[in-house]
Image (cartoon, rainbow, N blue to C red):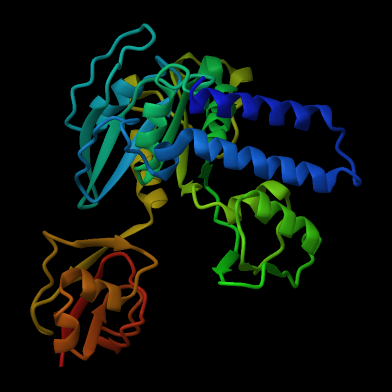
Length: 364
């Protein structure tokens, strides 16, 4: 029996113990420790997949463009058709399951930004346990910037199924990491700083110990509502990603079916060109990117053909570092134009946050 088989047996035993142990106030602590043990075993089993791909598990994908987006969903929901519609790709289209057996890339240009879109093999229930193309598909998802979850009008409930598979694989969609910091120390065992009283210090200590922590200071900087979120904050293998949910084939919809679709979900009929522009805008918004136009001097026009693409949380100091590390030492002033400038050519500090279509000149 190899190591993988042993870990799978251990996982099954822990999962059974969790199921068989009634959950109440008296067993809450024990449940937390069991979930920590389960998380550690799953991380050991998945290995490289939970580190963003590699290790011979995933497809070899050459990323290009300013960001990468993956189309994930059930077989035959129209991923290939959508890819062909919005990019320059030629993905085989068929009306039978598992048409796409590899990964087909395409490039979508929107608002001057080049976005690589990857059509993946259909993901099915059990993918997180490597059913179908499970681990290969998930490794590509983890290495991307945004995930599009797709289903059709006949199988709306599968949005939740696919979401659960990704959750089980350590991917957290449209969520922020828990505000938990861990400072490893050389001695002192596990110390807990939790002004919010989310859990008893003993429970946090036992869960951290089960996850392999020895000497460390664990600080909670917000209320942590559940043991699962506490574990997410302590392990390093969780991937937090923006997601867009889509229901396709809306041309086949009946009035009663529309009520079943949550408001957050984008409704599309790719063949009828319904929802295409909304799809592009949702991708743009989800990626959280902005375009920054650079000026060669204060009086000239900015170069709008080649914008600098950067995260909207970045500041001008980060913009400079993207351009050149040496340039930061050569300039000491920044001037901006655009919607968030108080007036054209406003001088701002290098801590000023970027905004979309900002024009900027760096000088002395």
